[in-house]
Amino acid sequence: MGQSVLTQAFARRDGVAYCEDVPAERIAREAGTPAFVYSASVIRDRFKKLSGALQGVPHRIHYSLKANSNRAILDLLRELGSGVDVVSGGELFRARRAGFGAKDIIFGGVGKTAKELREAVQAGIKLINVESEAELQLLDRIAGEVGAVAPVGFRINPEVAVETKHEYIATGSKGHKFGIPYEDAPAVIATALRLKHVAVLGLDMHVGSQLFTFEPYRDGLDKLGDLASRVRAMGATLEYVDIGGGLPVAYGDGDADPDLGAWHDVIVPSVKKLGVELLVEPGRFFAAASGVLLARVLYRKRSGGKDYVIADAGMTELLRPSHYDAYHFIEPAVARDERATVDVVGPVCESGDFLALEREMEDARPGDLLVIHTAGAYGYVMSSTYNSRPRAAEVMVDGHRFAVVTARERYEDLVRLEQDDPDWRDA
Ligand code: LLP
Image (cartoon, rainbow, N blue to C red; front, side, top):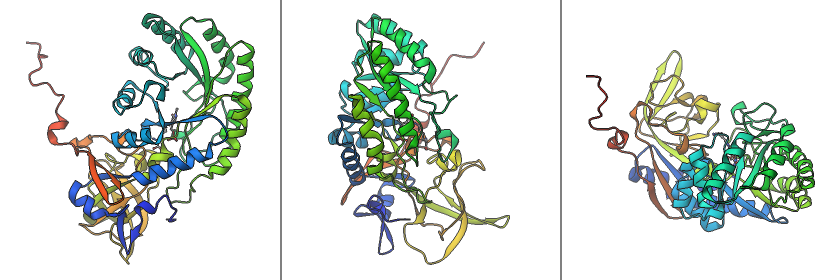
């Protein structure tokens, strides 16, 4: 894997894996495995780089909480000046708890409930991106009841061609469930302009995730630009254009980190022409390379001519390989000369429980610590307790210091919500 400055935080030193300046083995011994470890310096570095790339136009970065909603990461990003993008009442709760002010928060999502919309309106957040006329009408009613005017952006499906590694992470092409179909947008916005309790403030798109070409941004922005002129002609005062997330990250199988200069050139001039504040919602870009998953090798076994490395982490901790066929670079924490082609699998009772298939890698033996790279985004947040496996610990590292920031779940946590003596028997 390329030793870019961004992966340097988890590079080996003299053949031994480190998390910033702390040996990975030391963290694993203190926190146990499986554990996610996040690097504060990677997040700081990436925030600085992205802010730099957006110079030249008024903008605000709204970190997309869904990628990793760990409190320590939220605290760090808040201190750096980030806002947040939330997609549920639960994320809104986490954002407020982490100290984000109402005006630091924008709210998106295709299926917001009345309760969630009410919470957002009551909190007085910066922008609610609505995705249908029905949602708009509901929001207007709720804002009326609350006695407020809801700040509205319209998530438009710009219906552009989007190439992503996996179809599940493309969102902005014709027929996707997200956003208002492009041709319907003027009518929906015209309706909004007649409603009393909504203010039309922005246009929004999110065309996909892990976008390794920037054409979808360019094509999408062109379309939002055309729409902006039409909407302004109808009398709307647009303040924001939100281009969503989607910046790609190098996972080590040939992807490159994005050329932020080229991205700037696609985004900034056209947003400048629109004369609005640019909002961006990156998730993966900040979180993915900031994190690794540490797992212990439990067993090695040969079956049907295949070599299996059985680890104490699998699809319950990191669903991406199994759900998206995603590649995560894996290496033992202590370098080995021998190489082997193996399936790295977890303990879950599913054949789909794997971290890597037919992977040619440094051989790993029982007792070895494995470092599973680029696991900071869509890792812990997508984890489950299937097979009654308590959730992993989360650790934050900053230079020579580290701390467990989310404790490993205990067995008691698995049953915490079960009622002692519920009265359900028909007798
Ligand atoms: N804004 C909206 C409206 C989104 O739907 C998303 C991601 C983002 C921002 C942040 O996108 P990012 O910058 O992270 O690409 N679980 C999948 C990724 C799903 C992305 C969902 N939406 C994965 O592990 O690859």
